[in-house]
Length: 217
Image (cartoon, rainbow, N blue to C red; front, side, top):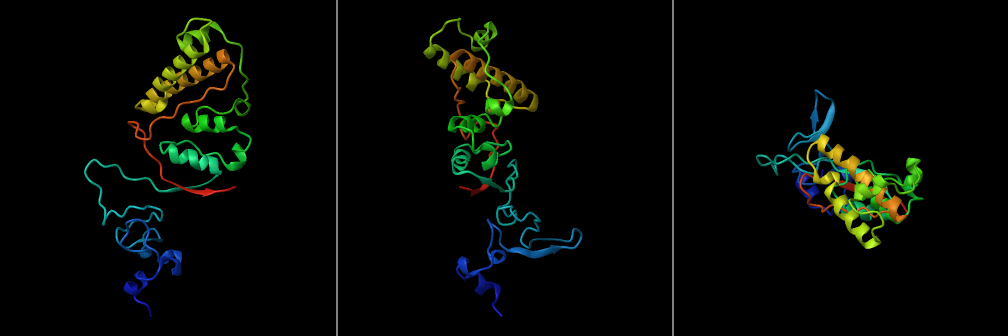
């Protein structure tokens, strides 16, 4: 019989998935059984979360440090995978390749950069309307302003009201409403699809998700 020590020396490719240590765990998944919940777990830290990378015994949390979320497995298109890599703060529901196959690259980018707030108009069931006095007011520019002025005002306001820059549910919701108005106003006045700016990955208050992406071509 092969001992655990001998088993751990084998090349990972020769092992069954359940015989490979995951993350920072000292023991393999299934090395401990919780009789109360009738569930398998890790013998090292007694965690029942199979996809939890961090072992609290080998890598304990420091005071004030937030507990890591489980790794999320999602099936995505290649372009969606690239966007999620660049935007680890994305926390909305990830569209399936089938759902976003007809979206343009800019539409998909806007969806991710806005954390799911801005969807293609045909998906929302909305159409761009004619610009109104309210649209000019939202962008804080005079009616008839040139395209460069419009774009500069739009980008400034989009960054200012981006929900990821605000703390608390109420503040985020209020910012989100204004953010959508800014995007709609710019599109109505310019006649062009707005490009939503991305927030920095390290933006304050943005909790980064852990993705394990399965790319579906």
